[in-house]
Image (cartoon, rainbow, N blue to C red; front, side, top):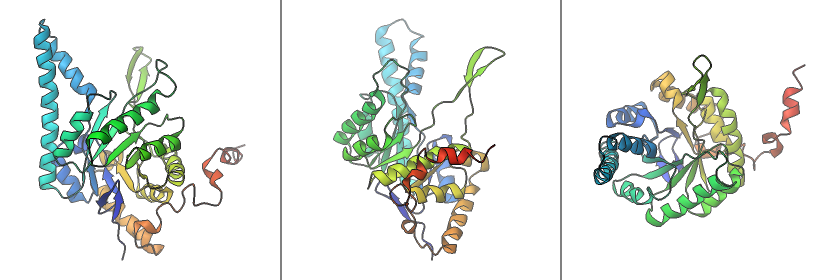
Length: 324
């Protein structure tokens, strides 16, 4: 009999499918619906540092008194955080799936203390999304150093698992993943999705690009899951960017992932897609006589295939040689 139970970042999951941080995980009602649909774990909607700062700035504009502005900033920040902690508590009290809190930030100092309150509120783990783009104003290792420093500080104050949602623009992803593991990170998520921008040529203005990922985006996620899984042992990986089907979930696990985060596909196909994916995964496992996720997890990662170059550039000429 097929058993889809697995572990990710030290958490026991009834199946590998994880609801990624999004508007679908920002209320108890929606989270209950995801649990009823069969999801294996929940990543709560991220608490965005920029959102808190923007709200504070708008309210502070109505006063000319610095003391009042300071009070407003402190009040807004505390209000956002209290609501987030309430969501953690209510979810833990009424749901049985693992609850992973999420912080989206670009500064180190503000979040280490709040991380402890997240732990105390009952979160099973903390996912940190360090949203930094180096546009040339920082040194070459600024982004990597940001990840390293924040994990160092977080591990001083919390004991729950820390998971880092990684950017695609890391120069040495396996090297950084190894550092984060040595510092105590329990897992990484590949990858975060930066805000997509576009240009309106009629108005000559910057505008927003597509909100959802595409199935073609999964190729990079798959490649780096396989490479990091094969090079950095005992660090859990979740595939996130570009997952749109049950086949993607199977591919991710074959490449070494322990969790499969779903976001765009839930918006586009609805929550029923969770049950459909689980059913198809079970059928695929039955056909190949796999009874557990561990039977095929990492079977095709960088360390377990005869020619690791298949994940590297050597395939480039072969790929394009068929096009005359």
